[in-house]
Length: 422
Image 1: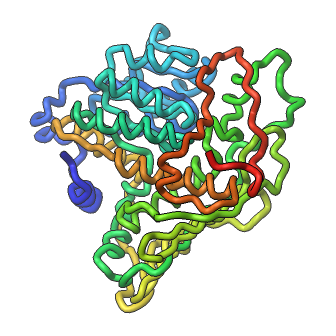
Image 2 (image 1 turned 30 degrees about the vertical axis):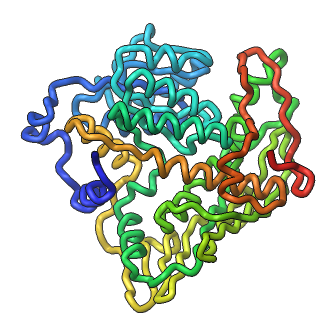
């Protein structure tokens, strides 16, 4: 098993690449590692590129998406980046809602899951059932039943000794690892408050309803505009600002909060979507310490993605200025080399596979995902939500049966004080 300390030392030392002859020989490096990509949009294409770069003998052999044009665009980009390591024949390009099953059933070793997160619990379960190593983008689900499903899958992966690496990329950033190491060893004293911001522009604005092509089904329209619907993305807090939520969880050593309250809403018209464009969640831990996560997705506004971790001896600051720093009794500024965190996720995954070791990010990836969902629940309902309530929620956002030509009436935008906790 690869533990956090081992990851940290790898990140700090810039360990030899897997291309080093002696290391590769020890790992039987002449064996091809076959990679399959599920979800061929921008993030999936980037993850596949990083996977191919992580190992000299990793080849992309299968691709799956609900849209053929996404596969075509992705493979062109990957061929430019990775050349002969892209070995996807037309017979191994699968299209449709069940394309992921055909990909996973094929002769591959590693699955990259990069579809909209509403589909993730089912896809992850199928990959682990079939004995595949997985790189799974964040978040892991859009509702509590989905999180509970993934928690079961995590146990299955552990029992099968399969690698499961999550796309919470900041955990693989060497300079951010250094910050949290210092926080955890007490350089800022005891944490008294954490304030995280994720102020940015809309990721994929919802197009006007009159631009929907005639005859296009509800399901296709919603998947094409997946970022604007709770059942596909989980809302902006759960899909994007979840990175800030994950860093908060990291600071508290992944101990869950006791409860949270939140505000949020929609300032800019949603054009038929049903996600909020701003949130502010106030989490509180059993010892009374609080953390606030504030997010906004609006054009023309002040943007910031930063973390302010306040302690009894100082403050750690990430995202304001070129390097993280600590102000206070143990003043410090990061001055070392910065590694590409997206690449390191895959470097460590493929290193573990080569060495017959196991990485499993499952527990913390589920906890951070539920923290984001918990904040959304509090903002949608206007109520205080406890960790136990969030964990046991019965609200299911994802349709039980998804058919490509099917209908799905989008629930209305939540109204705090009127929308009920389920």
